[in-house]
Image: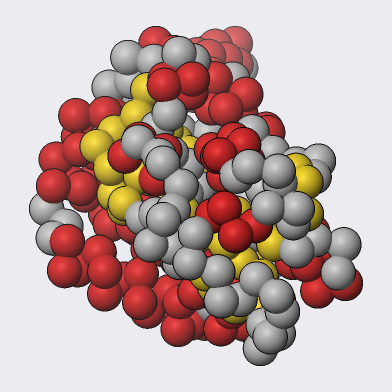
Length: 287
């Protein structure tokens, strides 16, 4: 009887040791996979980007996965647009699963710096001011500044930015769009807006005479709303390429920078324009 009891205890003890060993192995594997300096590792299986999902055709919110929409993390909605399509290519090149997080514009940089996201792909320009706090890849789109106005209104036929003297004009908060308004003499510069949806509502209601944007968004806005028109100028805004370009925002000294630049270099200008044209075509009418 004692021998049987001894054998039973020995077997039970061996089983406990075996389970403990398995648990340690699994824990170590998880640690090796997910932990790294500055929250970044080559073992991480996801590539998480932040965007507004409200700046068509660069990015927007939609109700389903049509036209390649990606489920927004923690949200019942989906994100689509040029940024999303380029992000898909970047994620594929990195061999990772793309995760999209919807974040207000002013929250993008803090979210990146606190490791809530791996990158910003939100139609963001690599300005000198932003480069002080984060890094950027090479550009993945370059455009120019335009004005969105009411169709049939007094400013639709403008050819110079100076034609907007006395006009009520705004742009998005903390962007170059808002800063260049100062180049218009005698303009009635309005408070900056948090987002483009609010500017479109204000323009529709007559609160604004126009807002500054980039050409793709201007095409998008006028295509989505028959009451809007995009104005391009022969005498336009003076802006550097860094203010009209779009690049991927990354944490300082991110190990992803070189890898993403290599992937972006493999996307031709022709393919980029095709992706943008498709994004403009596919944008939701509400945008």
